[in-house]
Image (tube, rainbow over all chains, first blue to last red; front, side, top):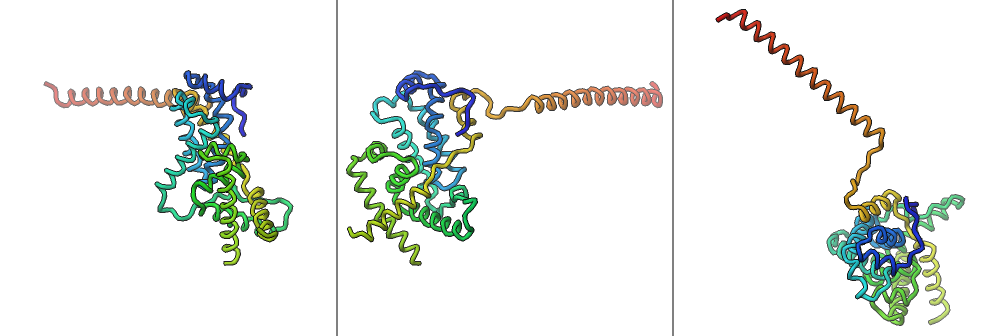
Length: 191
Length: 90
């Protein structure tokens, strides 16, 4: 995370939101600094390229800025609200790009191991590529669940808030997703 | 669910933990977007003082060139008119 010119003060999300809703752009800037990396990371995994991830991240925050005064009525934590905006924008992006069958994954996803044997690195990268392609073939809600759990490290309850489901429903969807991932992954390995 | 199935699922979870790492955005992107969000009136492109100084020098040189061109052209035109008057006196 880059260091910006101003320091981020210890301001709670609620207070920063209140100030932002009153038109305090600096307060919105604080919230932006807090969440930009997480939102970018989520969108990056959903789109698979830096250019679209940056474009959609910018749109998420501009949309949040436009609607920040309506935020209170939704009764969601700020992060959940931002992930919902991101999810909707990514869904629109996929709809607009539905002709694209393959999502190119930039090289930065693949980890480079300095000390490991090249064969090991190749195998690991292949496994990782297979996993990412299997994840990209999942329905949108399941992709969202996997990314929120493993990239953003959200709990089932937090994921439930983002997805508008109960904690139990998230748990059950996660289990079904895991089974389907295993089956698809095994198919790839067999082929 | 038997042990083999459980270990399969655990292996997939392990692979996801190691593969799905957060990706950081470019610092220039983060700073640029911050600027656009908090100060929409500010220019999106900022020139360094050196670039601005060079640009001003270029403008000044172009201006001086223009003056020299206008002066030279006017002197040429005046001498042409004088020449024309000498060749064709009224």
